[in-house]
Image 1 (cartoon, helix red, strand yellow):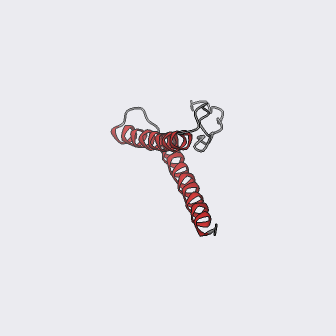
Image 2 (cartoon, helix red, strand yellow):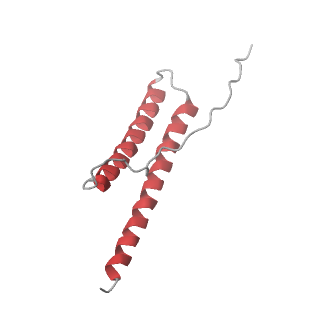
Image 3 (cartoon, one colour):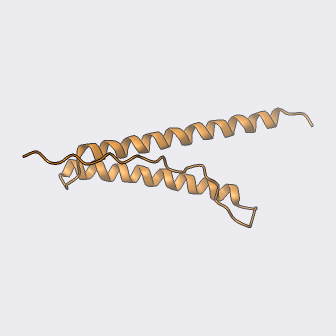
Length: 98
C-alpha cells in the first residue's frame, strides 16, 4: 500500500533585510548587516547539513535537501542584489556635488 500524500506547506523567504529595531541609532546599520550575514550563513549551513545527511543516508529525503539548497541559493542571490543596490546608491551619493 502506498504511503499517504501529505499537504504541501508554503516556503517562507527568510527575512534578510528586515531592520533590527533598537533605541540606539549608532550601530543599527551594522546590526542589520551582521544579522543578514548570519542568516545567510545559517541557511548555507542548513543546506550543507541536509546534503550531508542525504549522502550518508541519515533519514534525509532528496526533496528536503534540494529545497534547503535552493532556499540558500535564493537567499544568497537576494543578499547579492541588495548589496549591489547599496553600492550603486553609495556611488551615486559620492558623485553628488556639494
